[in-house]
Length: 633
Image (cartoon, rainbow, N blue to C red; front, side, top):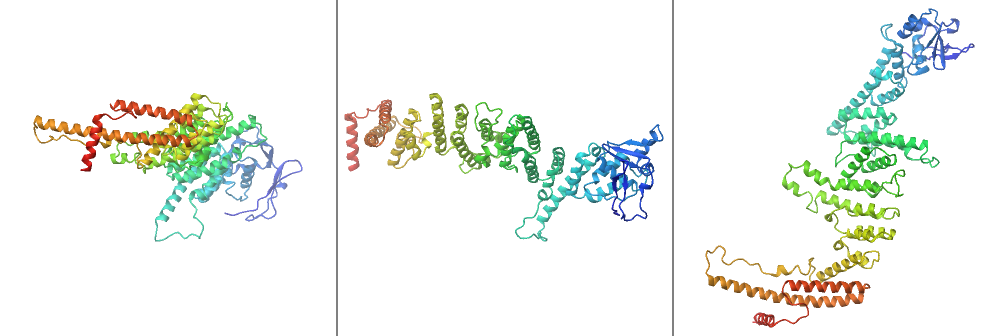
């Protein structure tokens, strides 16, 4: 294609613009002294006007020819073409082309020239290799085969609507981008599989992926064109991880100037509301383009969290927020504290709280309900596979819920510092997790203690309900020691802590068995089986002897249990004296010991045993002495 140095449009003395070609024109036999020939038509485009000649224009433009023919006045000298796409710049290049000047077609002007050629009807019907054919050839040879070139030209089409849509230029560019992207993906995959011809890369330089070298170029597009491009590449089969990278890059670029608010902007002003509207439109569009929801999503948790924070700040739609909450809930085990510290919307926040606890409550509930959803979706799975889901401590779901429980305890400790946080918002979060979700309750105890310290004036009923969420049996020794002296806790909880701590000490002295001291009674009874089982009919005499034998064994076990209880009473008295001397909460401990003694005596009465401290009767002394003589012999 020949290239010429095009002339300039200079303003004449009369104020009209006429062509003044430059002195050096390549591939031109003669110069073009327009100043020697008076113009016979003036083309007006907005505030610009062009003093030209009818013959060169009508020889290549069907629209100008038709307008001149349809005009009633044959001597028409003015014509308005303000609707031409591209404005004065596009018409200037088209007019030069009509005068035979070989204009240069580039990526920056090909869309404009293609739309101007369509508007001016510069087709092959009037002359061969007209402007429309020239621009089409450039599009096919240079633009459509290349992704970056297609994106550049598509960006130029944003200001050429609706003509760019009428000639199907936008759709052709979008389809070209999608097809070439998938071709690049397939080619890169084949190169990775080809071991005979490995890719030679420079050391310490990672090879570029399609999302690296053309995905970032999509950030120049407006939101509508970006949505259409991403929808096209998704339908063509582009990988979800590439789609996620493109989405993240476009979102960060688009929100960069909107999220960071100017401190001088008055909150609630017209400019502030306009920024919120732009944020809302972008966030809702990005959420609609996210890949399909999955527990193994390629979308990073940090990106989903930032989207939700922006959605809340910009008052996005409920469906948009619900979609983001579910996506975060599906992969909550990948989150860290910063991901769930979501600020509350200042416009909807009546109590002035710092964080949006309602969204977090819904997110954790979604995660806890995943097991039910999985059971409904996977009823046809093998039973052995089902058994591995949650019972085993090493199963994936068990490890995930343990991570989430630690995350929730850390979150509770953080939001407990908010003085404006109501107990009605904090307590449901503390009660959310099931019992098996926590191996140790120290984190929850710490969060509850912080909340009680920051909120000293809460109601006693709320204080009791909040402390009820703590499982005292799962507190460490340090936490138990702290809780026993914590004046912020209800008396009932302090007594409960002392009770379980005493049981723990007794178990440690009795060999470290982690069970209640009454739990060993049943295990001490010998396993009995009917002596006549499987041997046919037995005589009444044999049956009577068997009953007497079992009766003697039962009496011996009763005596043994009485001795065991006597030893436990001695241990109890010594431990009570030691704890009374060492423990500061004497009043609490005394009431606890009285209660414990009552429970022991009631248990004895239920088992028809003598209360603690009473003397054994003659029968029990006889059985004890007989057992002792038998053991000596």
